[in-house]
Structure formats: C-alpha cells, structure tokens
Length: 359
Ligand SMILES: [Zn+2]
Image (cartoon, rainbow, N blue to C red):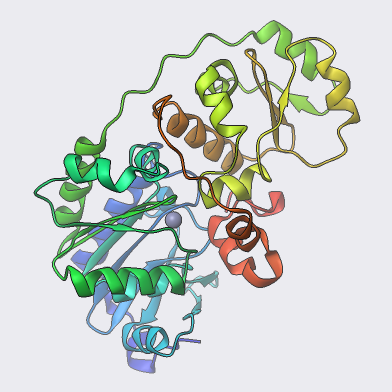
C-alpha cells in the first residue's frame, strides 16, 4: 500500500490549474475512439510529491464528470519499483467512492516528466503488432526521441522496461509498446497533447474499405437465440474484410483483445445453418464472425466490450495484408487471462467481467 500522509490528504492539487488541465486532456483523448476504448489507457500528473493517476477500471472519457483519479505518493511508488514490487494504492474520494490506482502506476512513476499519457492508439497498435514494427517506425518517427519497448506484461515489468529504455535514451518522450500501445510524457498537458497529435500524424494509416455486411442474413442467424446484430458498421469489417478476418482468426494481438474477446475469434460459415452453431454454443463467447457476412454479438455484451470490438476492427483494418505479425504467445496469453494472479490487471482493463462494465 502506498499511503499518503495527512498533509497530502488535504489535496489542494485537485483545484490546481495543472490538475484541471489533466482532466481536460483525459476527457478529450478518452472520447477519441482511435486513441482510447472503454477503460483502456491512463494519464497522470506529478504535483510535488503526489502523482495523480487514473483509477483502475475507470474511463478517461469521464474525467470531467466523475472522480477517476487517485493520489499516489511518488517516492513510495519509485521505492516499490526499486524493491521489485507493484505499488497498489487504494483511495476513498471525498464523496466516498473507493478507487484503486491504475496497474500502470509504476510505469507513470518512473517517467521523469510531469504529465504522462498512455493510449491504445489504433494507428500505433497497427504498427506495434508487426514483427518489423521497430524497423518500420524508425523511418516514420525519424528525428523524434522515441523508443521501442518489447512486449512485456502491464505493471512492474513494463515499468522496468521503460526504465531500461530511459537509461539508454534519457531524453526519450515517446514510447511505442509492442503489442500494446503508446506512451508520451512532457512537462505540461498542452505539450503532451501536441506530442500525441504529432505522433498520431506520423503513424496514421488508412483503414481498408470493407464490403457491406449482410444484415438480413445476420438477423436470420442471430434469430432469438440470445445473440444480436450490432448496428455499428465498422465492427462488421472484422468478418466482411477477408484480411481482417484472417488476422483475428489466427491469434491474439494485444492483451485487451484477449480479455474482452475470450481468446481467438471464432468464425461461423455464412449460411442459415450457422444459427444451429449459435444455439449449440455453450461457451460464453462475446461474439462470432460470420464469414463474409458480418458480426453477431452476445446480447450480454456491454458498451465496454463493444468499444473494444470497434477498436479491434479499426486496428486490423489498418494492417497491411503482407505484414508479418507478432501474436501473443500462449504463455503471454495465459498470464493475461490468469485471473488468480492478475485480477488487478483485468480490473484495469475493466472489460473482463460483464457485471463490471462499463468499468
Ligand atoms: Zn495499456
């Protein structure tokens, strides 16, 4: 537990200009589905000895209307990293809401600049899941102080990788996390916003055009079986675009995908008999791809799941057909999905348990 002392508990920072700027920055990026999906991503600001960081399971989009930030004793968080342990911080807000600091608290702590933003940018991830991602970005990000961070689990392992990268490149302010996302840091929220926009511009990819979904057949397959047809057209490209379909049917590219999709996506044949598969399907799959036709989702799917599904569709639409991809290994997937050891991580993603969402 990283506790705050009584002086810090007075928390004058919550009314400071910097804190207000953080709320604005967080809400802005949280509302951009190309940067953040559901409760993914996190932001922080260091104000003297206290680092305010987004709480696990909360949505950045809510930053200006809900209490989503937790104060963490910065020295103690850094001490936790030195001692090779996580720095879980629970916090009860003035209105009695219990929050826990993001799983990425230690990563934010080791970044020396005042403001940190970690986003699940679909453009960045489309590059970050490639075997040749680092080489390709060397060209795209030339002239910028950036580092490629090989895939490691969230939490302390990621903090330690970032720390290692900073040793070799102390001025780096952009970190591309393989199979995960993007981190930038700067002295002010305005600087971080500019940096994010600049990187997004450099990494922008055009989404492939996908054939239209066959809504009639999808409705016929879904029937009254507890499944439904989403009306978000982007989602259907996962099944109607051949390249997207083959990418998601071949493995899991990033941790959030593993958590919300319950593993590798299943593909049903494009025919009315697919309804039989659905009715006999006893697993808790959140969605199915119907080959060339569109997507069917479990009626228990939450808004958070749907945002993640849209994010997945946006990412794979941006991946080149010939791209060599690095999927998460079985061991990496087990680590992400091992709830006993990592329920903290799953809460951070906020999309694992349907009753938690929107988290
Ligand atoms: Zn993340």
